[in-house]
Structures are given as structure tokens and as C-alpha cells.
Image 1 (cartoon, rainbow, N blue to C red):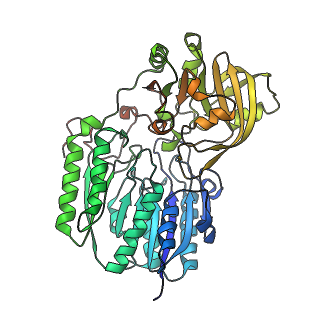
Image 2 (image 1 turned 180 degrees about the horizontal axis):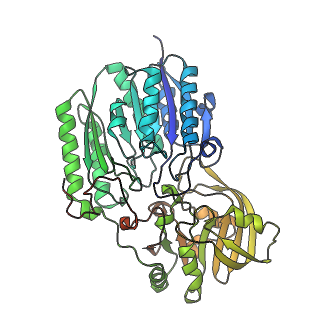
Image 3 (image 1 turned 30 degrees about the vertical axis):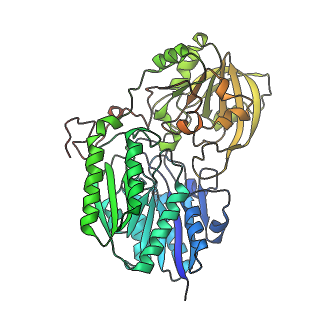
Length: 499
């Protein structure tokens, strides 16, 4: 029996409409810990990665009657929308790899689902259309999605089945890829027609994560439905709320084997349950930066985490706004113990490159990539460490086991320790501070540019977590943004929104 030839690929970018830092062709082309492009056979031997492609390869490699045909694995850090040259790079590379692949029996493709371009709202759907232009509409295509996808009608129509992450923080990339590959093999061998039940909920806010609370219970139910007769996969996508696009909102997907009634019933049940608990899913109130510091000081013990989620690199912010750092420096005399913070700033590092340990330096830090939300902050500090290279990816944010931070410098300003890195870093990594000789779990305050990820790396030790209301491209306060294209009414911007 001839082997089933399954094309595998991945496109990863989360596009923030409110970020002024675009994703260019070079963003995708340049290899780094945060992305780059790999094509063809090298995809099959990326042993240091753990993403959906890893899952595709695992399942197809264990099946004697299937062959993984590697197309491309490309991505870059979340940022603003993709530029036209970035779109051309992605499309041209995809078409070229499909031509090289030869005849295929099916395709497993991983998409973020919230990728847009400066002139294309739904870049994921656009790329699916490119695939269909090359392979036709009869070839089965199964999509593995980030659960923060903004799922569009076009994406549904151009794929046979979709299945999304079931964790936030995202720790199941490999498992989602494995599930997608099994779904595709099942479709090919059974020949069953997949039917999709689809519901869009008028909800626009940052989800609270799946580690605890009502959303944890919702996702446990979704997992349990995998064992129901006729079910292929069910997903809840809480959306990426920083895309100002017409099909914005939380999405429910129920995919069944040729059973439209079951798909519609499950989609209705899940959508109605999520809508009924929408108020419980809202994030706790944010506090002003100065109040965040005062509350941290009042906490007995250490460490206390102050989160500046508005500048979370994982959602398209640059990670270098200075609002919270400025407040920590201004109030440092009130804090008994060390205060730790990090900013990516290649420019500042270049200006103090000749400094050695013990030297005093004067440098403006931060707001290097984007001055829309803050300005560079003048700092005078003493160099305590000059280093660089790789750190451990403690929470496995992104895909790689190790993260290249480039050059790094630690500055001491009294009891504040500011770590500057040449490169942007995904995720709140304790290993970053340890790289410069600091133990973050012993510090009084650790300021993290994080929304949910800190729960993986700091949640088990933090005496308290205080969310600060800072300006930025990923603020949890949705009233900070001037939405022009999302469908209205939408909750909670419109409290009376109905479903």
C-alpha cells in the first residue's frame, strides 16, 4: 500500500492593530530564538523545538503508512501587522514549497489565527486560500490553531477541520499538532465528511487563562467531548482582542463526522455556557503604577510580582515601555529589598558596550522600538554584570528550549537592578535574572511584562501578584483603545451586548 504523503507546515504571527512595530519579510526570514524560517527536510530534525510541527512529525513518523512532507515552519514575535513585503515572502515561500513537495494526500498546517497584514484583515485565511489555489479544494486540510485565533468564515470554509490549543499559558503546542495529524489521518482513512458548528460570541477582553476557575472547567469539558461518538474536535477560541477587525469575538468550533445536528448542538451548548459566565471571566481591576508599588511594599514576604501586561511581548507589544520602571525608580526608597526589571534595548547596550563591571554609566533606556506609549528614560547606574548568550526557556514560551538574549548588561540604581538585553525575549523567564547573578525569587519586587505567563514561572513562589494599569499596546483595559472596526455591541465595551 502506498504511503500517505502529508504536507506539514506552520505560520506563526500574532498581529496587534495597536502596535506600531511591523512584521517585515526580514522579521520572518532571520533565524532567531523567536522565529525565522525553516523549509524542507531540516524541519524534521528540529530537536530543540516543541511546537505543532513537532506534533505532526511525531504522529506521522509513528505511522508506517504515512510520510511527513515538510513544507515550511515560519514565524516571528508578535508585533504590529505584517507589511506587504512580509506577505510576499510568506506567499512566495509557501507556493515554492508546495511545488517542490509533489503530489500530496493531505496537509496539516499550524496557524496562529490572529495574523493580519496592513491591507489584509485575515492573513491566515489568505494563506489557506493560497494553499487551495495550489492543491485544489478536494485535498483534506486540517488546521492546528492557537486558541487566541480570531476565527473567520474564510478560515472555516477553506479547511476541513480545525483544532485549537486548550491551555493558556500555552503548554500544549505539541499535543495540538498531534491531535491535528490524527484527525487528518482519520479523515483520509474513514472518508467521513467533517461538519463544523460555528458560533461567534460578542466578547472582547483578555481571557483569565485555563489554570483555574471557570475557564479551566470549560476546557476540561471540551477535552472530555473528544471521547463522544461522532466528535472530531471541539475548540473554544477566546480571541486575540487587540485586532481591530470585523470578525472579532470569541469563537466556538464543534467538528463532527458528518453529523450536522450534533455539531450544531455542541456549538450551542458551549457558546451558551461561555456567555453565561462572561462576567466571571473578566480580569480583576488594574491599579495605577504608584498604587501597585505601595501594595507591593505592604505585602509580607517576597517576591511580589508587579505585572505590566500592557507591554507584553507575547501579544505584540515591544516590551520596552518605561512607565512602570520610572515609577519603581521614583519610589525605590520605599522598598526594603531588591527591585528587578528588564528591558530589551540594543541601542543602550551599544552605547555602554565599553563599560566594565563597577563603572558608572549614564544612558537613556527603553522606548526604542515604539514611543507611542512612553519615552526613553534617563538612568544613571553602576554596571554589575556584562554577559550574553543563551538562557533556559523556563516556561517553554514559544518553541525553543533555549533563548538567545544577545548581549546583556545589569545596571544597579540603588536597590533597583535593571537588566538590559540586546534582543527581545518571549515570556517572563527567571533564568534571565539568574544569567546576571540575581535570584528573582529572593527579590522584594519583580516587575514582569506578562499577562498570564508569569503563572507558570512565578506563580508558585509569588506572595502576591499586582496588575498595574500602564499604557501599552496590550493593556487589559480595553477602554484604552480606539476600536473602529470590531462589531458592536460587544461585551464589556457595551455592557448590554446580547447573544
